Amino acid sequence: MAEEPMSEEVTVEVWFHSGKGEEREVLDAQVEAFNAMGTGITINAVQLPEGSYNDQVNAAALAGDLPCLLDFDGPFLYNYAWAGYLTPLDDYVSDDLRNDFLPSIIDQGTYAGHLYSLGTFDSGLALWGNKEYLEKAGVRIPTGLDDPWTKDEFLDALEKLQALDEVDYAIDFKMNYGQGEWYTYGFSPFLQSFGGDLIDRNTYQSADGVLNGPEAVEAMEFFQSLFEQGYANPEPAGDDDFYINKNTALSWVGHWMWGPHSENLGDNLVLIPAPDFGKGAVTGMGSWNWGLTSSCPNPDAAWKFLDYLISPDEILHMTNANGAVPARKSAIAKSDLYGEGGFLNLFVQQLEGGVAVPRPQTPAYPVITNAFAEAVQNIVSGADVKTELDKAVKTIDQDIEDNQGYPTP
Image 1 (cartoon, one colour):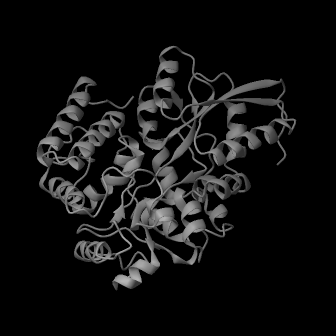
Image 2 (cartoon, rainbow, N blue to C red; image 1 turned 90 degrees about the vertical axis):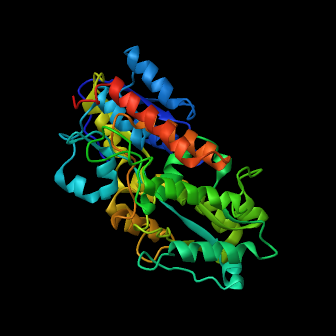
Image 3 (tube, rainbow, N blue to C red; image 1 turned 60 degrees about the vertical axis):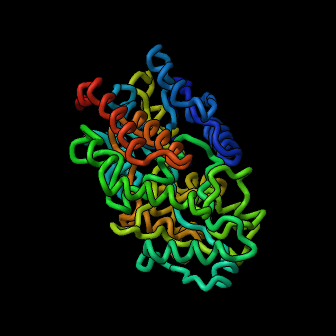
């Protein structure tokens, strides 16, 4: 890719989270390749621990020490943009470029009418299944978005799979990931498929009556019952019950498990769309994405590097390594896994077909996700569902009140 050299040598500092090893290796290679292009721009990439990444970004922002370009997990964008840490990308992104991105990427990156971020990949949730077990149990295997399991079919499948001698737990919910963003990303779709949500998205001013409303309570009581009935393990010893030990028949998890699942289950692996619990099937979306900081002294130089990262070839460079959904349609068309007929094309269909729901697009999101994750942990441990959701609502509404409703800047 030819880049027009800058008139003066410029160094751009870039922060990124220390995610999967393959992602780090690809990004290191991309930095090295870009620096070798002779653009007059040198990228100084700094890797930070993922677990404390958000805290480090906030601390650096308060100290006036943010880099020019950084990545962040999707829903944290709104708090950063509201706080003034980021600068809009609108002037850099042409209509043609914008239209080539999955709508979910543009949706995720937009706050208060401006585009603040772009990602090189998106994400998706689905049920991964052991085909041998499903067939042995006589369970129907849905094949597309138009025939998901109903709630009754889902429960019937769990009951039949649980009865197999090979199966200790019918479904794995990846509780080994622990309390954190996974709980919101992975389990808020249950709320939404029952008709509840994390907050009133019409105003983003309160979670009362939504997160603790009858639909949400029903959803989380249903979720709790799956552990009480022994269908799911609340404390798995490791990550591999589904694909190594093969003592679970289903796994509710995202695209990132394609590698270990396919390597160990081979032709026995099936990908099943999210069940419809009454108000439509729902899955998660959103992933790590990139934004320019408002304090960056060389935004044009930082954009040149971001423009390089989001080129179709570099998107495929990354997604062929980490297994994620390519962010641009032109890249998806070249992908064996995600293109039409590819094994993982279901994730693209969910992102384009309205099945995937973004996490709440509000600066209050960091508080929302922490409050909901705590509620999920306690609910799985047997706490009263309504009490836990009421506590989460109180925490969320207090934060919104403390910030005067997070007025749009």
